Image (cartoon, rainbow, N blue to C red; front, side, top):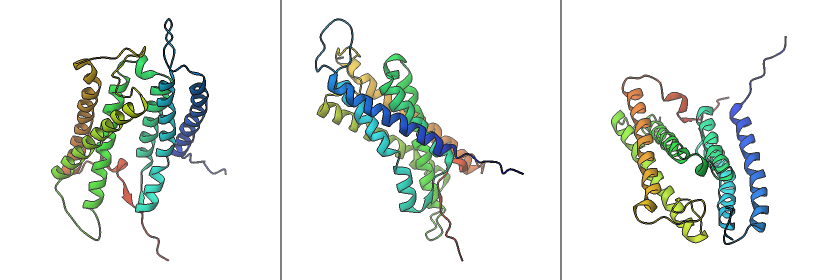
Length: 240
C-alpha cells in the first residue's frame, strides 16, 4: 500500500514566490538600464525611477522571505504554516502583482486591500507574541485578554507607521513614488491629495489591526480557539 504524500504547501508556495521575485528582479534590472530617465512626451512609458522601485521591492522581498526561518531558529519558536502561507501570499500580491504587474495603478482598491490585510496579519502576529510570553513556562505573566489585544493593536499600528517612514525616506533618497504622491504619468499631486494615500494607508492599517485584535480578544476571553492556528509556539526540546 502506497503512503499518501503530505504536501508542504507553505514551502511550495514560498519557492514559487521566490522564483517569481528572482526572475522579476533580473527582468527589472535589464529594463532599468534601457529605460529613460525623463519622460519624452506622448505615450506613457516607465522611467528609471519606476524600475528602481521594482528592483528594490523584489530584492527586499527575497531577503524578507528568509526572516521567518532565521527568527524561528534564533528564538526557538515554531511559526505555523497558516501564518507562513498568509505571509508569502501578501509578499506576492504586494511586490509581484502590485509593483511588477502594476496592480497598484490598474486596480484602485489594491493598495487598500493589502494594507487592511497587512494590518490584520501583523495584529495577529503581535497577539501571538504576547500570548507566547503570557504562557511562558519560566516567567508566568498572566496578562488579561484585553491587554493582549490592546498591545497587538498598538504593535500593528506602530509597524504601519514605520512602514510609512520607510516609504517617505526612500521616495526622497531614490526618487521613488511608493507613497503615490504622483500619478502614473509623473504628474505630482498637491495639498490634501498628496497626503491622501498615506493617511488612507494608516486608517486601513488601524482598521485591520482592530479587526484582528477584536477576534483575538474574543478567542482568548471565551476560549474559542480561533487564534491557535496562527499562534507562534515554542519548540519543544526532545528528551532522550
